[in-house]
Amino acid sequence: MLRHPLSCVSFVYLCQQIEELEQARELGDKTEMDELLDNARKEKDTLESQMALLQEQLSRSQCETARLRDQLAHLQEECKVRQAWFSPILHGIFLKPIE
Image 1 (cartoon, helix red, strand yellow):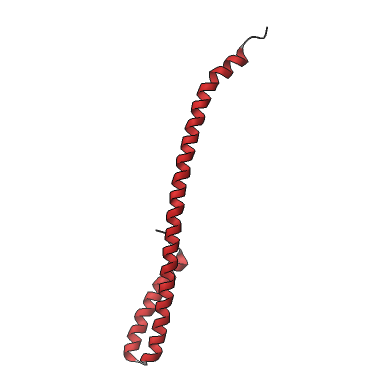
Image 2 (image 1 turned 180 degrees about the vertical axis):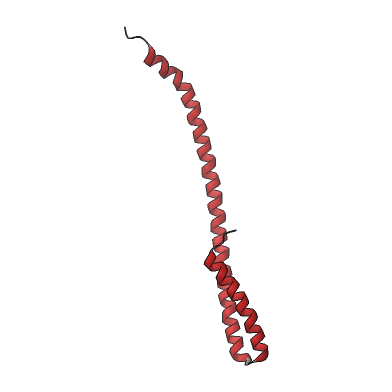
């Protein structure tokens, strides 16, 4: 799971803020507290959406990285096979005595 420090801190702060606003709403002016609470919830929803997008991007990036690693391993193996095949041929050409 992707952890962006600022987003995680903001998310935790918003959750705490929502709890505090809910408690304050019970004790004070409900209209003002409702508005603050609604704003905090909207911001929380926005951060959750951003976090979901970042997690999706991370997942795609991890898949692409795995695919590229597999491709690199395949190419390295192919290079070794070709090198093993050509090495005796090249070795024989360059070590032949010149007549």
